[in-house]
Length: 332
Image (cartoon, rainbow, N blue to C red; front, side):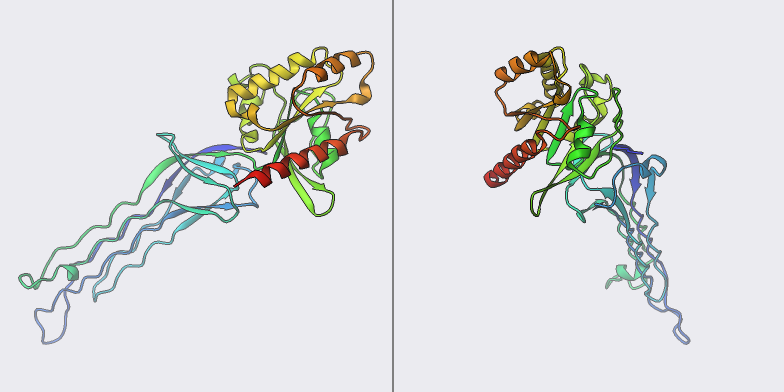
């Protein structure tokens, strides 16, 4: 089951308290103070792990608490610090403060770590309070509380290319033909209920990642259909493939619907490099005139493809690789 959001509570360990103790030796009726310090509380650490694919685990496990540090002991024995807790998250997870919405971290690289809440400092024992005027102090400190907070986790898939289209436009079939991914495919709308990723092996020793998200409908950014839950997964893509069915009654209207939904979700999306792919051309017949007029009015690269027969797929991949290479070469 794919889950891309979660709300959790994290609490670092409290510091151990300092000890009040006095040395007890034979023939020394008034030994000096020897109370040790308390140990520090453990931290909560988040680590990006590419083996994690979803936030499903955090639907049932929502509270993460770290044990406190050990209290100080006599004979100047310091308490042991609490062991930190490392929580694994999928690569591409955004971490936000659950109350303010402030962005705390964006884990983009495998193995990247962040200390999200820090443990409390251990308290000082009475041996720390000795002075020239106070040789037998009875002062000691309690351990400090560890930090705690509610967090919102949001997963955004990492892919160079995003497939966008109306329901049943052929996105999943295309993904299955150009990658080794095997998404669910059927001849009815909303077959895809969760984003799918696939790796395109392009010619010799080159590759790029493609994301297929559930189909968009008009009003997706307002919660209609499934788009509102998954539009975020094309936020990080470098190139977009807009799929328009060759059999569409009004390809212009379909295209504008998709652009409007992306614009409403994130205005910058429509400024990304994009390719318009006319899908299912193997079914094209008397509606060819609609497609021709639509392509004549386009101001972006386009191609005709059929995932069923494979026609045009290599042309599409060549266009995508060229766009990705241009972006890579122009990056600072």
